[in-house]
Amino acid sequence: MPVAHGLVGASLVAAVLPRAGREREWRRALLAGAALANAADLDFSLVFVFGSRGWHRGFTHSLVFALAVFVCLLLALGRRRARVAVGLGLAYASHALLDFATTRQGGGLELFWPFSFERFGLRWWGLSEIPSRLPPAEILNFLFLEFVLFAPPLLLLILLRRGVFRRPV
Image (cartoon, rainbow, N blue to C red):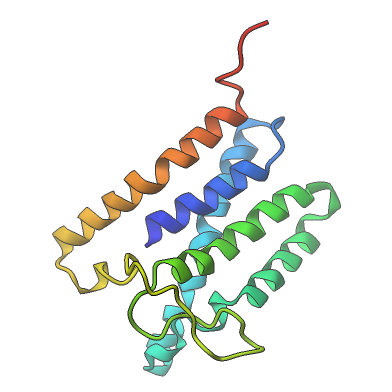
């Protein structure tokens, strides 16, 4: 679900960022949020290296790992940009929560690693698993569905944060 992850991550950053800010910084922060929201799936590289699908949805999908990412962001960005670090940390954490909510089949994800290696999933909607088994044209349909479902909240947040709906004084 790369489109959904990216849009949710960018939405969380948009919700947390201060209203005042330069356009370029806002765009960079939203793009960083979208990228970080997809970063947990870099564990696919471990699947290829070690030849085991057991690495996917492992420690990189854990809430503890998300907290560690947030702490690193906070240290790197400093106190002055703490809100940006919070937004980016939430964007990273959103990946695990979205996968948790959209996992029906398979083993789930190691949400509480390193305290537990048990895998969890809500198991009521398998949106994140369907596309991997489809032909390319149908995968594009699912990417479009992700966009239709998750782009409107981001657009609404951006418009609200810019004050588009405020009445002129």
